[in-house]
Length: 92
Image 1 (spheres, rainbow, N blue to C red):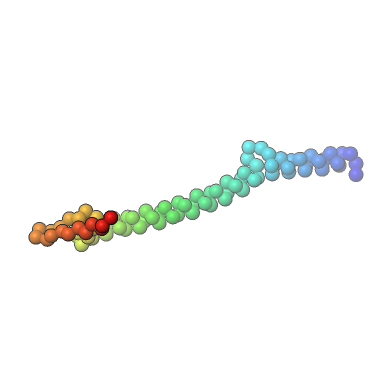
Image 2: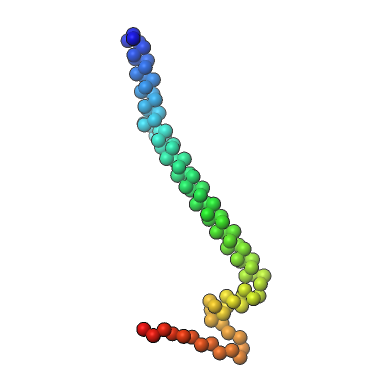
């Protein structure tokens, strides 16, 4: 091999190593960012599904008087006129 050919090969290998390992945006950084992007996209999909579920529950609550009454009774302890509310308190 000639000296020129050895230097050219070293330069090419140096550029490849620089592209893989060094610089502000190395190939390894790029691969890490791609993996992180997929994780974030999955999180967004999960949140979108949760938002859809909450929107359905809200529409059900707003349009269904029976659901409104259930929530008022279970969450807020409300009763109708003439009813008696009994609260059971566990012994300590």
